[in-house]
Length: 144
Image (cartoon, rainbow, N blue to C red; front, side):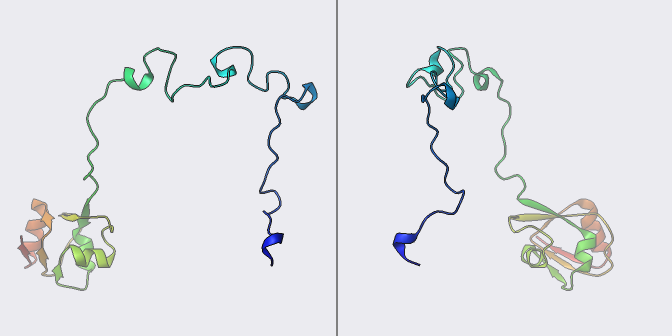
């Protein structure tokens, strides 16, 4: 291969559209711009969302609420998932390594779903009242 023989692959480049080259080309006379009006003129374009002076749709509609940037950072963990883990000390790092919570999770909450039949120590996770009661009933403990 030599630098002077390099060229793009077949079909990678298209011929430039030649407008204003007669009736037979299909793009003669007005060159596909139609008749009159702002869009037919050179330089006749306006910013995105401009509606000819009418109040734009984005400004007519009411704005409500906001989108929280921190939503979706707290993962939900079931008791049945904790029961399947081979370790007795459960924290966010253990849940991340086991693939139970997403890599983007910054916190986790244990919910009462399923059963837990062994004593585990839960560290640094938030729990629902039912999950807390179930873990303590199984002989486990919770470290805040």
